[in-house]
Image (cartoon, rainbow, N blue to C red; front, side, top):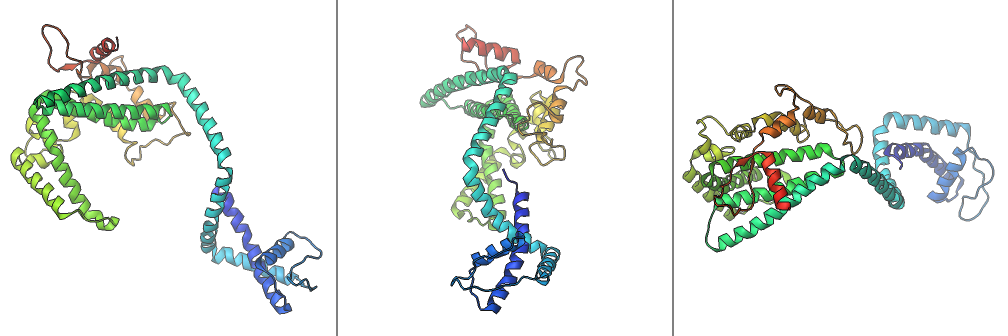
Length: 400
């Protein structure tokens, strides 16, 4: 496919022709001849190509002699040099407008073939990726399918419980977070299957946040789950204030006063009920975490409460590809899934982990919420924190 640079160079090569066209138009006028722009352009191209001989220009077919001297060519050369020196910026701008049309026409004409070529390239890449990572990705998709099946059953049971009048903020929140986790995991799978490892790492960051919030809520139960539900009022009010500040610059309409006042009243009621700290960042957890008056509940504090503080380093590394950080890794090629600086950092650190790699050590200590179906044992266990092996065993039993 032609590049923009090639199209720009083509437009710049037209500058001498355009200057010569003006010179020829003056000569036609002096000779009393009428010539269309198309014919004048054809004559200019004819001269610049070094051709000699007769050429039909005038509409009426009359013979006429137009002499192009060395002086004329020198004039064209000097005007071209002056145009490049003094009017280069304007020339580029004018050329850019023409380039857009040329590029659109070129792509419209050549896109079917280009599309097939790109599709073939992507298919070949996916084939190589599947040969290397296919088994691992298949297992992750199987785990996601198991989670989705369980979530569907949990949703139905929850609907029946609601119909029977059993209210539970904890059950509603945990189910909502589980659905969100399934969605994010599916996004991660799609990105991995298409070779976007850095983007998948960024989505893992979101999945980690969901897991941490779920663990903290599961630890403290119904009361903190209720606070988490009502905290959406705080976030709505913050969003309204931000929108009110920026909507004029964005060219958007203001929020209706009635809606704004309703959210403000709900916000005041929530803060009055749960305390002043409720309006702070992650204020839904401030009461149960017993933070000081000047302390703000950062995400690192939630990780510590969930026993996942050792994941701070991978979480920080994943943030590099979310924000415009100087540490953001530049891809070596399109669809690079072979690793890279960020991925290698995550796979290989061994400090304070003995002979085991960082992920192995992390997996031994990871705690996840037990979301198994209610069992028929004599003594049923409440929701508790379990290690990954317990979760995998539960998954195998469910799949069986």
